Image (cartoon, rainbow, N blue to C red; front, side):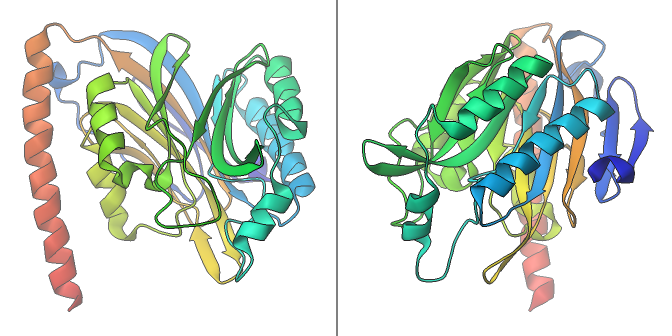
Length: 313
């Protein structure tokens, strides 16, 4: 499947392997604002946009195939990230709540057991979204499993945008350590919640993992905006294909703390690879200058967005 469509692109200091639908943007090196000659930690990440079946059994097998293909293509991969609620379709006309309750599983359960064995076999972290059944309530949850096969984090989506299909979670941002990298886990529209944004700003994670069920993002506007907000690396995963009236174009990004989209991908089911280098700031003042620069960049981003909206009218 995906491995037959892979091509290789190399840049310093990261090695990137992308599928044919991915675009690599070599971000401008801004020296002291984010000094990539001073890398303290690295994390090799595969992000997945998966075609999703109605049947969770099919999706479990597909996840295993993708992890094995990613591991074969990148033997040094350390984290594989899947999108939101990836064990089934995101919605079904008139019966979304009933459908998700029918496919919901406990944590731990059948799927976590399968993925735990896989994580332990390849000694990697795996994160994926699923419908979780907990005390007779259904949650939209993102699970993180470590290289020992242990469940180390479960994030339950907070911002359901009025949906009655799931119970909202109570923790705005779930934090975990991945190879010594302070990581925040959120799910899609969580980012629109003020408490979530405040918690991200307060916790100052080095990496934000965002699992998506997002149909599209024209001109990468929302991705670009979020990338500039939190002074962290951001990696997202999504789904691809038609699902009962929706079409998901599979858009994913890897973004750096300066808000640059280092890698973008869409328009097919695929996985992408990025070797993230986490820089050490030489002084607290650097963060202040970087946030000032990114704040200005964010203002420009909004102005450009208004220009795009005007040109559509």
